[in-house]
Each structure stands twice: as structure tokens, then as C-alpha cells.
Length: 199
Image (cartoon, rainbow, N blue to C red; front, side, top):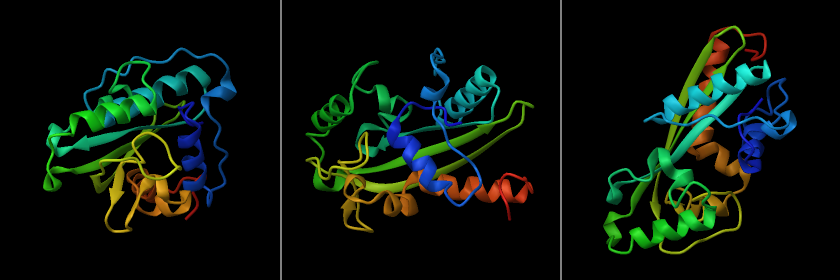
């Protein structure tokens, strides 16, 4: 089970794990479950917190992700507050608008940023596992692309000459922070010789 109601994330989870005999379902399949307080100071703390909480609530193995954008010009902000950058009920448009506003004074050589992701799996037996991934990029001054979600239309990857929002889900999965975290996670699971994750 994926600890999210974000359909974009669930789609990426399914794509990343398409080669494994697992079915990814989201929180919407479990009805109304109160959200945990994400009070961790790092992505790893929040990912583990969510995985363990929703595993306890549902009784099934839970995969959680905590990820966000770190902007050098803003000293790492929005970071773990990426989804709530413009407020608790902020939309993607709200967050992007605030980011663009706060980057007005940034020069051409001051727009470096990175997406960081930590994945965590928690099982009913108390076991857990984490993996992380990073993707470096540059923030644009205008939105580009119609795909993805969050800050994807502003995050430009020079390596491919596109924003995340201009990439196909497969293309994004090979280079994104979450895609890299999934690669690491699957390798760790294979090393554990899990029956779920075949060698």
C-alpha cells in the first residue's frame, strides 16, 4: 500500500515497481484514515513516520515517500515543508507562485536546486527499510510542461534539456529523485532475499 492520496505519486510508484509482483493501492482504497502529524525534521523521519503509522492503521505492508525541493538560494527551503510551502492547504499553483516570488532576486547562476526523496517500507512485524535519491537541477523563471505535479514545471534538468513536467513518466523515472530512490530500495530488498522482491 502506498501511503498517499496523490494520484501522481501512486502512478509513479506503480511505474517504478512494474517489474515486481506487487499491487500498489493508495489510501483512498482504505476509506477515511486520519493523517499523521508530519513533525519530522528530515525526509527520512517523515517517511518512516508515515510508513509505520499507515501500516499500523491498515495492517498491510506500507510504502511511504517523503520528498521535496531544496533551493540553494533559499538555504534549502522549502525542504520538508515543500507540500505546505504556501500554507497547510496550499495547491501546487500556490506553492509554485510563492517559489517564483521568492526567487525574483536570484541571478542566473543562483538558481540551483535539487529534489530529494526518501522511501520507507514498514511491515506489520515491525520491520522497516529506507532508501534515498537526489536529482540536481535548475529552477526556471516560468512554468514549462503539462505533466507531473508539484514543482515539476519549474524544475529543469540540464542533462535532458527538459523540466520534469515535460518528461514522460518513464523518462522521469530513470532520472528523478524518486526513481533513484526506488532503484536503491529494490536493490536492498533483493539483498534481503525477500520473496516479494525476486532476484
